[in-house]
Image 1 (cartoon, rainbow, N blue to C red):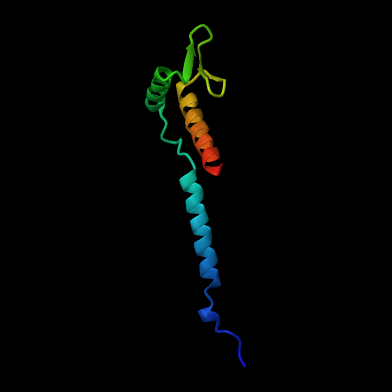
Image 2: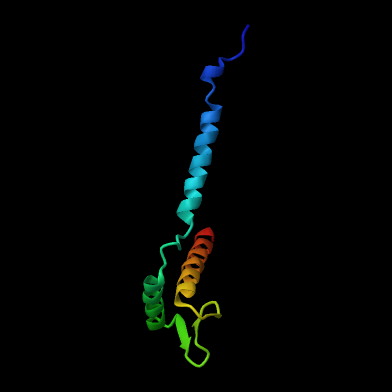
Amino acid sequence: MAGPDPHDDTSRDYERFEKEQLAQDRDAGGVDTADVDDATGQNLVNDLVDADVVTPVPKDQVLVHEPSGTAFDSSTQLAVFHRGWTAGRDADLEGK
């Protein structure tokens, strides 16, 4: 008696589908920081300063991200960091 018809085997289709789903989940959980240009970064930092999340230190010409204690000399770097930090914090909260 012959074995199963190899044309009816869908296990590889399932594996491919599973890999695509995992990739989509990973992408959805990631944070897109490529769209943070100087203007976007400055706007976000201004909002964070107003919300007391960031403290400007004019003497040292840095911006301090208060929740993490990290200092930055670029508003764009700070904006990218804050987006990642927020996403990481939110992921930790979802996992609990």
